[in-house]
Length: 155
Image: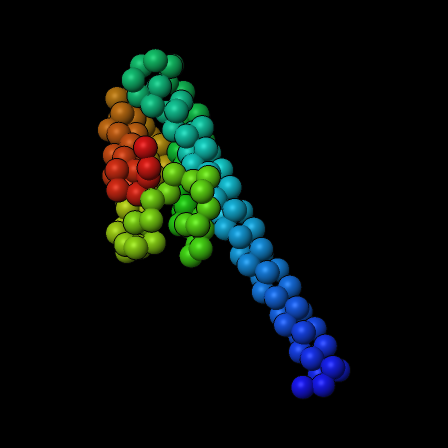
């Protein structure tokens, strides 16, 4: 191989390495963004479920308007959970997500769907709920969350 060809080959290898490294960096960045996204969704759920649970337990005064608002938010947020778990986002260390999410994606999807259904039921019933009816519906959301956490979230 001539000196010129060697330099061209070396340049091509270096360029390919830079592109590959940049591609990996982009994948890592996308995965980190996915983790931040899903953590934000879960924080939003917690933010809205907390007052409903307090109302259901009698620790906070029942407020029908708050129940309706927060139940709509929970229903909306619950539909966005799955998109926070794309392939490759399991490689990020700053996450409580267990590898089983990606190994058993169908079961994970079923559990996410169960949360969505419980949240939709609450949101649909919210305009006519009273303090007595709130508890079982918030409990159903809590059970859906727990079922997923039991199998797919590190303690």
